[in-house]
Length: 110
Image 1 (cartoon, rainbow, N blue to C red):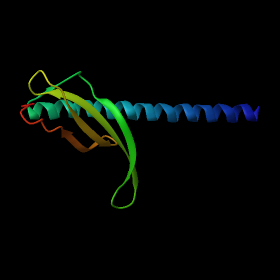
Image 2: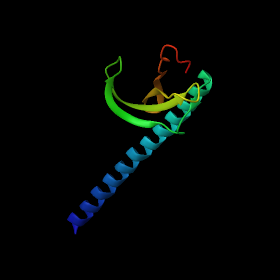
Image 3: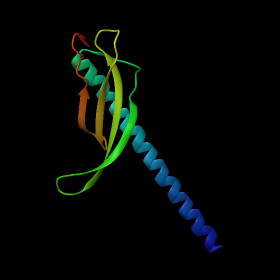
Image 4: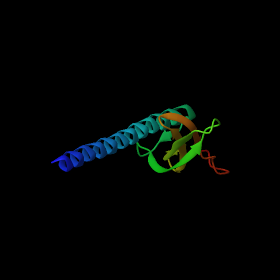
């Protein structure tokens, strides 16, 4: 009986941890979508596909030595309605670390 109780507690803990990671990932994606829309609006370009794509994550060190997880998202946009270009967003938690738009190719106004 005590083994069953221990197994139940461990299972609940694992499920709760998994749910928390999943929820944090959804919140980060929502933040990245808002940032992409705002960035495109400020740059007077059109945000394409209506969403960002997860591109990866990495660990980074803050100046004080603490480690943090950085998530990178990409998104497509157009400046002329024809060509596509790609932007990126880097988040530390829900905080914006970097955002950028690709430089237009020579002769391409997007």
